[in-house]
Image (cartoon, rainbow, N blue to C red; front, side):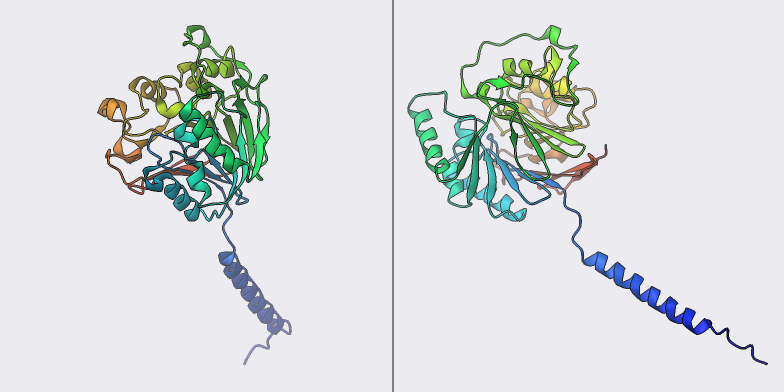
Length: 351
């Protein structure tokens, strides 16, 4: 004898089928949605200069310096290739840290390849002479075609989703600590000042980029004595996650007082094979408490095996290189990944 079916059973089966269909549809739709975007940073090899492309989650772009002129448009081509890979069709903010050929020289060639909306700098060139005048005149000619933003210490660069704070500009530094800074620096007593630097290096635009809990600092070529003003007697900046090594790792910058105060988890050095990467600065960074890795754009010939990181975290190990770079992806919670274009090695650093 068959048991009569409950009068609601048919409706329940229909409801279950509908629920299954809706669940499946939601799963498929989720797969079609774009993944949450993060902060992207490309460290482009301009062989001893600087060109760092920052792309915010909103898609706005900031390029810090443009490398050299000449070399058959080498640096402009490499920047344009990195921009294309990042989906960038224009430079929203070009930050020129200072007026030296390895930082501002490539502006005219890059401007012929990519539109530049805003030119950010510290104002007039402090250096004179034939080469300095030619470089600044060439840069100014293109700056006049866009919007000029002259920054001073304490200003911000208005990129959506990021807090980009100017720490130094035109020889001045922020007068008071940032949130998270202000603690006494115990290393300051051992600081030994260098001779006064009258060059553009000491006038570098230095910035702190904050995305959620992630903090990355780039001081351009800011030199020894000006670093002191940022971290002594009190550390005005506080700890960072990533330190873009000042001045390509040359021994005119990167004092222990600065690097130890910043306490980075990772350092990234935009050195060339025979420029920057000095053994004493490499050792200072290497010995910084809490440092997990020091990534390099180039193997530094002068450092030998004792003062270079392992080949795994160096983008170019041969002096005659292919122009490989490094890439960083950061999430709002402070987790970030650094990858090496040469060997595809990557490492993730959790907060």
